[in-house]
Image 1: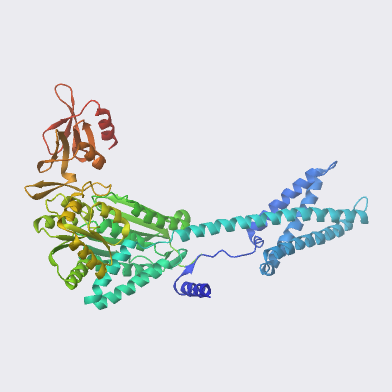
Image 2: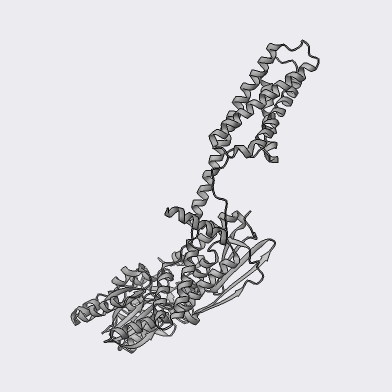
Length: 367
Length: 247
């Protein structure tokens, strides 16, 4: 009951606030034969089979003639199989994988039988010396069915294994993204709670606002890591986070936003900017007694979105503290997971300024 | 009891102030926003107790406590921290107690109570035991007690350490002082920023300006900010050359 409710809740969440990447489902293992690529692959495989069969014929007088006839037949048979599987796909995908596999196997054998029958009629119509006998027809049909049975069994098995392999890869990638789920630092949580405890006595309104911000921030961090949200939503979350930090740090924290040039609907992995801001504060501003200014700027260039966060660096500690690297690696790996090589995170350290830039392609809806 | 509050967050200081007022029996004699300020006020105001946040800018609470332990009558320290990863270090620094934020009034009350229960002798041993550098991290400052005053020397201003019999001379940008620490310990703690150039000397990597030969053909080290040249022993020369070319 509880898990159902949770599933329902998270579904609602998704509808309202973002779109998730396609989940792993128990979909049909057969590739889509309606696609151009699959048709081409089918033709290549059919031609290879034709070569094998014509090479295998003993004591042939004219190999070229054999090859052309065999090719013609096999190409027709293979393309017809492809067409039948393409047309029956809407029904096949409703069935469990085993039944769908058996059914498509029978369909392929059926198509082979029909094609053999058609070939027999055509050959009989043509002038053949000596004329084709009934016995020849049965031999022809049974040989074709046997070859088709073996080849399609191997092919189906191959499709099934490949499908399983792809599914494993996908679920591994998703598990990785899930594990990379951004976590809010305990240091921040407990310090914020301490600030709120202090505010409740004299400034109850501010305390209330801080509790609301903290709640939203945690709801954000509990969301599924494979979720992508519009930039506007991530910015709002950052504002809430900064509001709490402002309570703690007062005037030591100054923030300048320069994101006017960015489309607000650009999708990015949930909690991408917030950990970078948290890093800038924890490693940059907090160790400085006088604090400093964090600048968040962005630009859009050739379909790519670039956002950079810079902060005055703490001169005493090197930039390469472990905590820092973990948070950066986390964001970097999630950008990679979503955008492959086009998702980037670059760290620069110059003239007392620490700068982190993230880049990702501009997408306003899930591909 | 005179109490000093050290925390870089204004709201955290407010909370402690309010809790102490409610508990009563304490007089707040000062507030510090960095470890260095806590140390300076700890020397000038001489509180009985410092409520010390661990993570503070400029100098952290653990290091401030370490320097304070050198005073003749050091204040008792109660650490306050947001997250429990410094507990061990805090006990190594021989704090009276260790409070987790958000701080509970009852918890603060019992810590104060515990402090009052400790008699003078117990406090004295607690304080004397506070030796050794905080955690395994390097200090950011060296402290020297001069006629009851604690002098702080930022590590980046140190040009070299030179051992002489029982003491080590610290030559820094604004003069020189003697400290009672061994060169070996100093090298272990600050080895990242200092080169061993001789059996009796460590030089700050950041202050090195170059190698020169004197009229007898000995290799000498020139350092920024001072005229004096330091001898590099034959044994340490290859290592010094290697690190200089690498940097």
